[in-house]
Length: 101
Image (cartoon, rainbow, N blue to C red; front, side, top):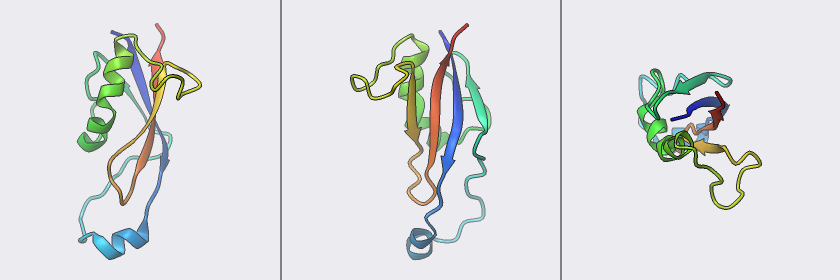
């Protein structure tokens, strides 16, 4: 299987939605823009949020198997995908790329 690199590209905070709908929480996302993770054997890297992983796992698995070209040309680099976590209050966008070895 190929290794994949996951890079945190953008982190957004919707304060208006949080104030209106979310109960106060002690711990929110602590991932930082520019942070990277490496997946080996399509396994979740340490330190990556489980919820974010579940959003991107199918794409990582396909890229690790040598696949790609999602949605017939969606990405300029067919061996990559841009995936967001499913947190509607503080979504994070991740770039997943195959590491060629």
